[in-house]
Length: 79
Image 1 (cartoon, rainbow, N blue to C red):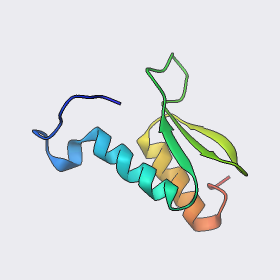
Image 2 (image 1 turned 135 degrees about the vertical axis):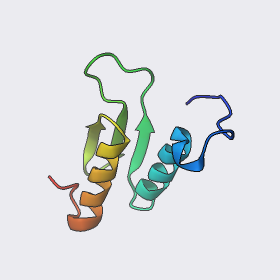
Image 3 (image 1 turned 90 degrees about the vertical axis):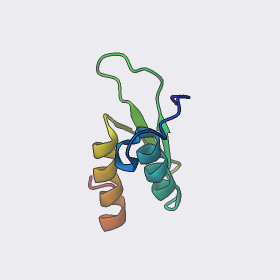
């Protein structure tokens, strides 16, 4: 998490707000969304976790949105 204040940027450009909103949407489904520390090349930046689904590595917030859409649409993350 970046501790800097992003209140001077437009609401749509606040990366932490994007992440927090998605994490809350995942939480409503009982799925945790966590942000990894500075990833090494090829390592996922985000991870969605649920006790019955295991861990799903996600390279970016867009991939997290797609995965969330799959969870909402067919219950298994589109897999």
